[in-house]
Image (cartoon, rainbow, N blue to C red):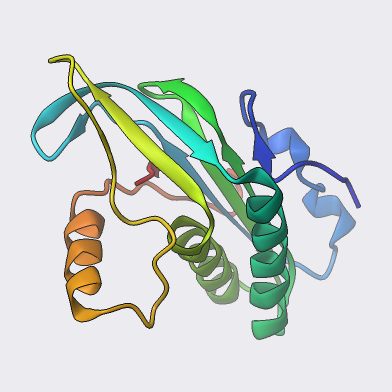
Length: 176
């Protein structure tokens, strides 16, 4: 098994992950790549900065990977890496990958890993706008048992997200 940091301050790469050839029982690969988009709620975005409480973020991402793998019996491999530092538009902020015997569990495991990392792990996103203003984005570190008010802000945030999935044979989106 390849060993690598789950929180990285350099460009992310699919090369970090163990190859599918190491998991001959798996017939499905799901990859989610979250990139920086050029807008948020109608404002033009220039760049983002992700900061983290890295020791805890590392530990929590690894725990989420283990939890998700344990939940889905057909899933053999789940990994997530997240970028910190300044990112320009179109740079990759997060990559999640899941290998499973069949596509359904690969899809489910990958999505669950992304959502949990996004809402539970202490990684914060600050957006810098073309007009010179900046703001921290709500949504980090919010668990499912959060208040109703938090849930409505999450729904608003999810609505503003743009998703693009690449599945199986060819092993990217906007991360909030």
